Length: 391
Image 1 (cartoon, rainbow, N blue to C red):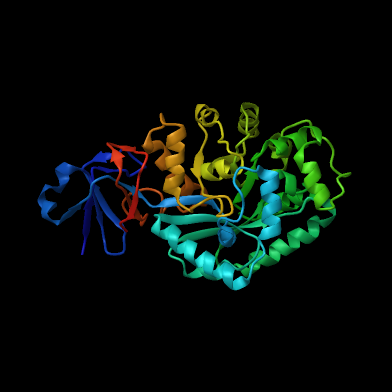
Image 2 (cartoon, one colour):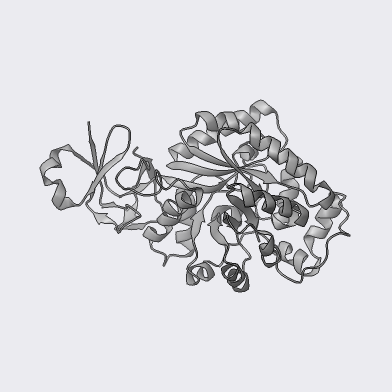
């Protein structure tokens, strides 16, 4: 039996919005056709009409499901260095408590219209949740180790953890410039020459990150002292963290840089000149939660960069909801058309994760999931948008 769903507008994403369009699906949720109003006259009595816009299921390009038990534990607006210190001190919890939280928020992400997630993991606890989830997950095994003497040990532990996630989709990801040594980056780069490895990294989430690489100064100095890490090995780079690390990135892999709160025009120019395959992920609610600041989106738009959207974790966000992220973007950059930011949250994310044959757009043969955004003004999301998962 076929299902016929219509709304004020259909957003296929891969093409222009269709006013009064109709999505035809089979019972498995596969898109059989997308019709304009003139093509749907003969089946008008079978069509279910909604007020609002129908969009594909959302892709959450950056999440930390394993931190779900930390909801509400960390004070807002204290800055990244303080935030990291709090995560380190508070992330430990009873395993059952962690599992319950992950199951709850996995289901809430699905209810919030999310169909696929790029998820950061430091242990194997999330595997059992992901195996039975209705959501597609790609797991990024996070590499953490700024001490060059520990690079081999850290990478071997990551290899072991990757094997534990088999047969799920998984790859390695350096945590951040300030937490991964050049030696560890080198091991990852060598690995990526022979293995397909989607690459994700937190980038320029705070000003102290750049200060550390430019001058070996700032708040990270005290942070490393707290960790009893001898920094004698680290030399002043006289470059921002991103510009310093670009040569260490693999050349044959897709890379997503996450947050980018303090990325500047020179950084963007350096990335473009590097010819690396880089996507930029925005997590606006987490940026406001931690640093009370958003990236300068005009720099990214004027440079015509590929953008995706993520939620980050419940240690740094009040919810795991992509629509909430889009609302924040619209509130601060109202001139952006909804069709553009919806593409960031759907097709662009699916293309980065390599799952756009199934997700990301409403096209024949795909099973993208369908969401209804009901509070709109024409094709534009309004300030109190709501989501209803249709398929």
